[in-house]
Image 1 (spheres, rainbow, N blue to C red):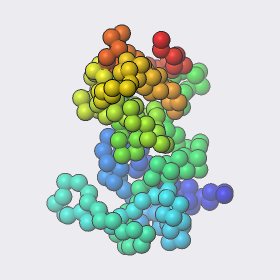
Image 2 (tube, rainbow, N blue to C red; image 1 turned 120 degrees about the vertical axis):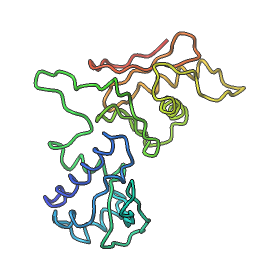
Image 3 (cartoon, rainbow, N blue to C red; image 1 turned 90 degrees about the horizontal axis):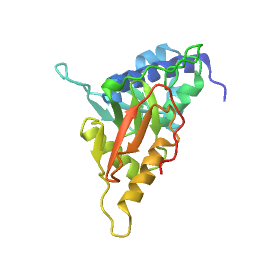
Image 4 (spheres, helix red, strand yellow; image 1 turned 180 degrees about the horizontal axis):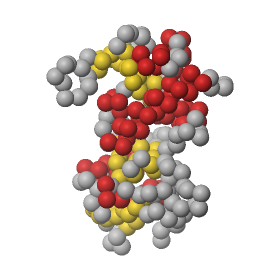
Length: 225
C-alpha cells in the first residue's frame, strides 16, 4: 500500500517522539503526540482509526495535572477524543521506518567512507523490557518478536545493576539443565540477529558469569566454544 505524503509526515512526528524517548531512556508516553498536530499534518479521523486498527499506534486521553511532574493518561480503547494522544507500537515503529527509509532509521548510517556509527559505551545500553528492545544510544541493537526468557532474564539483570561489565549468571537453576551449557547457548543467542551489531556478550571463562562490551568496528559475532 503506497504511503501518502500526509501519512508520512504524521508518522515522522510519531517516530520522532519514539526516538526522543529512547534517547532519554524514558517512557514513550512522555513524548506522546497530541491529536491536533497529527490532524494538522493532514491525517483524517479515518487515517487515525486505520492506524489504531492496524495496531500501529496506541492512544490514550491525556489527564496530566497542571502541576504534574510527568504526563498522565487514561485508556480510551478505539475512540477518538479532543485530547487523544498517540504513540507508536513496535509494529508502528517498523511501519514508520519503512515508510521513510531515507529520513529516519533505527541507527545512524555509516558515513561515505564506511566509518562505523558512534558508540556511546560510557552511557551503557538500555533494556526496554516492555518492548523487549535493547538499545545503545540511539541505535536499536536487538528486539525480540517472540519471548526469549533466558536472554531477557540476562538483559534485565544487567539493567537492574546499571550495566556493570560483568554479572554472575542470573538464570535460575534447574536439575535437568547444565547451567554452564545453558549460559553458553544464551550468550551465543544474545550475539545473534542483532539489528545493529554494537554489543558483544561473552563469558568470563568460569562458566558462571557473563560480560558485555560495546564496539565500533561491528565484527561478525563468532560462536563461543
